[in-house]
Length: 435
Image (tube, rainbow, N blue to C red; front, side, top):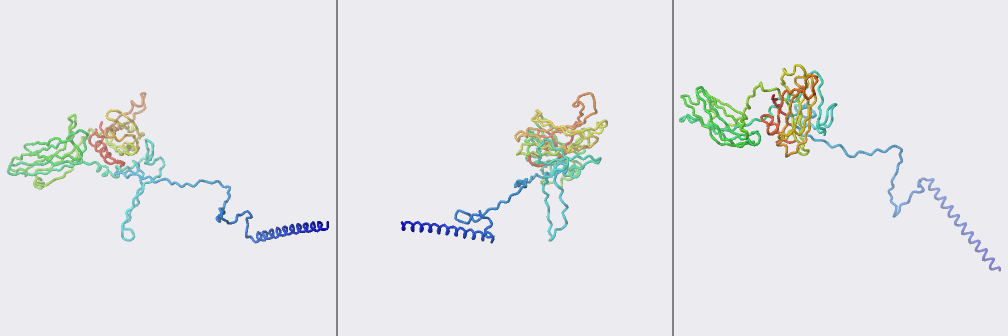
């Protein structure tokens, strides 16, 4: 009994001492942690300690009540447009470069190249627009707006390339004969299936002699290597008065002959030209002013990647004033043809009360590459008559028309050929209007 009481008291005291020891240890740990919090060593009690599974780098999250806008990472790409051979500020919005100083610092001159502008003026449009008809800013002032055809008229006319003739001549004094060797011709533009030849005419006071080469299929470069012989009788021979004319002619499948250009020289100049090769630019044939009904300035380009034909109707000049007395309300009607079939029609806006109207409108036409050689454009300058009882289409009066294509002639054929040879380039040219 005594042994059991002592055992119970020992167990009780052991248990009590163990409990007191645990309480003391817990109080000691709490005091140590509280001292650390007061010293500022650990601000966040829930902050994890560095270990094998815990990274030392922590991410800081900041809360905000403002709306988050996504940041644009993509920038609008620069649009590079081909600079045409004949530019017009109203049609293609290229910035005008600043004047270049006479000398740059350091003694060297630097040239600045303007970059294409992507900005759009009021009432205008970009040159890369996808609309069919693009209207360039109008000039509503009383003064006539200036276009590239006026400021750079020489550049527009120089874009018309005339054929060049290569020949040589020799005068035989004993036989009194003038031998002209027609070698070749370059920069020849003619419709498909046409043939060409060179005709020579010797004109003197008392007689006239004619000779011509054989016919050859026309291409950009035609070679004959044939001779023309003219007898020059008389005591003076080539020292006398006379003139020699060489003319390049074309003949189509319907036996229609067309004059592509000619050149003239006097017999007195044969001595200087003898035994030498001559390259001469042929002059276009003179057209009668009576048949001309004015001129129309056009700029065309072809985009092979998009299969699109762009036609810019710029302005007109020299329209018949006798037909514009009552009412001046002018517009241009454009018709796209494939051989003899009409595919598309478009018309510009009307310009009133101006004898030399300016439109500056671009029209985009979808034409496949393989059909471009057999297609053509027909443009008509229309004058809307006064209001009447009839339908509007019966009141329009045609002042003149022109045609562009490989089936056309003169400037229409040459302009179309230059467009095919220079894709993605704006090429402008004046076209005479025929009644």
